[in-house]
Length: 166
Image 1: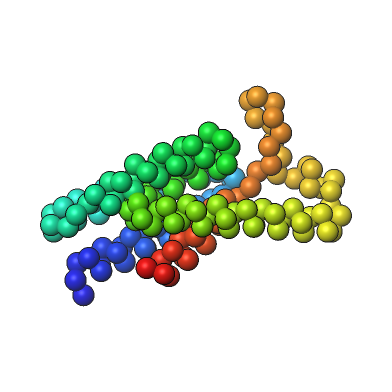
Image 2: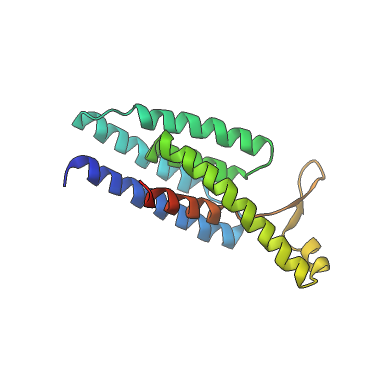
């Protein structure tokens, strides 16, 4: 087994483990810790250094960090995803590179749309309208009522699908 395959397995392990941890944290506290994103980012930098030492090109991974930051920052600004999800995806971009992170972002947005629509449909079909209005809603600093949505499972699904087809 060559070094590139070993590094790729490390990428998969880091990304999936971090996202699985994020899913657990997200369901427990509705937040993804900054410590998790920072740990993933440091792991990505270590993998980049290992690639540099072994003579491999790191452009893909540097672009992954940059492109994922820009895309997720824009999604955060338009309230498409939360801050924790944006930071996690940005850090994962450093680990897996721009080709895979773009795929993960697109698939996670599609998966998140279906998961969210499915949740709303199920609540509506079971006539839990009152409960639906009260559950997972908070008022932000601008007094806007927002529905809290767990996006991390969609990210995990997107990673698993992306890694399966590499």
